[in-house]
Structure formats: structure tokens, C-alpha cells
Amino acid sequence: MSVVITIDGPAASGKSSIARLVAKRLGYIFVGTGNMYRAFTWAVLHRGMDPDDAAAVIADLPSIVFECPILDGQTHVRLDGHDLAADQLNSDAVNAAVSLIARIPEVRARLVADQRALIRLGSLVMEGRDIGSVVFPDSPYKIYIDASEEVRATRRRAQGQTDNLAERDRMDKARQSSPLVIPDGATIIDNSAITLEEAVNQVLDALRSKKLPDLSAGTANDPNTTAAPPH
Image 1 (cartoon, rainbow, N blue to C red):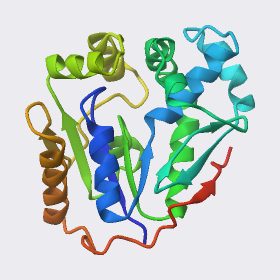
Image 2 (image 1 turned 90 degrees about the vertical axis):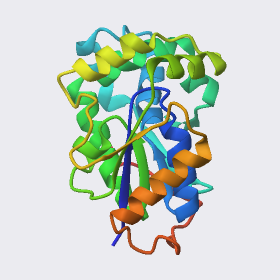
Image 3 (image 1 turned 90 degrees about the horizontal axis):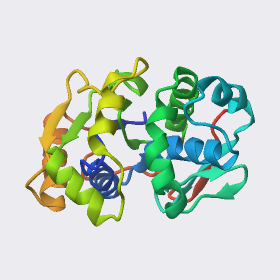
Image 4 (image 1 turned 120 degrees about the horizontal axis):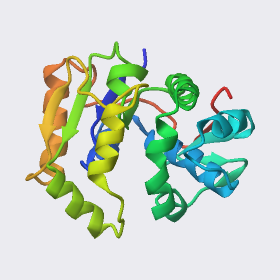
């Protein structure tokens, strides 16, 4: 049976970098769900819609078609048949609007279904903000990565991004649909003052303690697969 490791945490906590390396060590597929929300946000902005107009976003939702091709062991985002570059997904405009899009229940419902469908591809390391609490709440392999707001803001500036982390945190934690929480049973790792390698090792140690099967063997996932969500 396929295994899902859930890795949640706030923006700029380092969860994506950690999850990507954990997946590589285990031979699992890395799924960065944040890029799925960013792709929707980019589509909304590209179509000239107001991201704060939930009714307009919901009306346009069925026409937004995306795929999740798997390349080199991780998912990428393809929207309306076109690959989206990192600078598009991480632009200041997307950073400012993504929490507005992510709080819309209809958007979250669709993406949660799409994310759950990816389990058919094999064992996953999936990171986001509601993976252990909503997407795969029954997984016994839950990790929550945290870091101080000061450290996270410094990392954001080093990436050349200017989004307001305090406001994003407030919106992510206060939204009615799937708010950012520490999932029940999750191991909490503070990533404020440790290296990436140390963080990865702490995650692997936590997974060993949770009896993750075949920890050293990995899986036989095909690292170059093209998969489309059900929508």
C-alpha cells in the first residue's frame, strides 16, 4: 500500500525544502500543494479577476484546468496545458493574493480532492497547510515544521519576496475552511536555528519512531509520470 507523509507549517518555515529532501531520501514522490493554490491564484489574476471577489472566482473555477506532471520525483504544475515557471508562481502579486484564494471553501474542496487523488501514483511526501489535518488526516506520519516569524521573514527577504508574513499567518489561521493548525498526532520540529540537513534528519528520526515501513528501501515510484487530477 502507498504511504503518505504529511508535512505542514506556516509560510517560509522551510517545510518545502525539508519535504523535498525527505522524499528524495525515501524514494517517494514530493507534492508541494502550495503551488497548486498559487497556480489557481495566477490564473485568477491572469484573467483579470479580483481575488477578493469570491463569487467571481467560484464561477470561473470549472474553467481552470490544470495537471500535475511528475518529473524527477516531484509534482509540477501545468495550467491550461502550459507549464508555469517559478517566477510566475512566486511573484509578488501571487504572494499577496494566494491567501485570499486559499480561503475560498469551493477552491479548497476541489484541490483537496485533487490532492487525495495523487495517492494512486505511489507513496507521497505532501507538504502544505492542511495536509495532516484535512487532506490525509488518517495518516500516522505527520510532521509540523515551524520557525519564528523573524527567521521566516529573513528567509523571505533572502528569496527576494516582500509578502507580509504576519498577515498571511493571520489569514491562514483564521480562515473558516481548513485553517492552519497543528494536526493531531504531528511531530513538531522547530526549524528556526538548525540546518536543513539537521531538520531532514529530525524528520527521518520522527518517521522511524512512527514505524514508517521500509524506511531505508524507499519505493518503486516512477519519477517521470504525467498525471492529471480528476477535474
